[in-house]
Amino acid sequence: MRGGGGAKKEATPPKGCMAVRVGGRGEEMQRFVVPVEYVNHPLFVGLLKEAEEEYGFEHAGSIRIPCHVEDFRHVQGVIDRENAGHGHGHHHLHLSNCFKA
Image 1 (cartoon, one colour):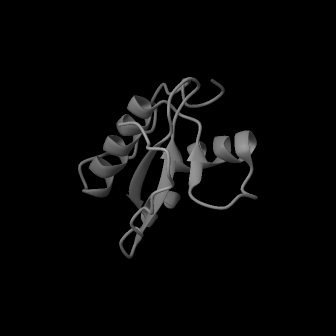
Image 2 (tube, one colour; image 1 turned 45 degrees about the vertical axis):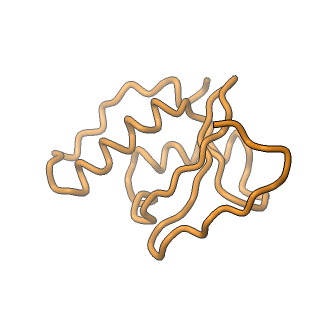
């Protein structure tokens, strides 16, 4: 999807969720709405640290995460499975594309 010429108002995330923008170098940023509990997960914390290094947190709007969209979706799947009780708490993913692109 490509954005139009004018600014569009995006829906406020539901209670207990937050919006983040995700995109690696050369990708258009995509908006994701994720549960706030993600901020407690080590994989997401790593993405937030990378976002802080890349962009800082002194800006308005959604947190921007410098990670390729497909890699972020993979991280989402891992977190969702673990939060559903199906994971074993192992975080040995090779996500170098998300960290230090």
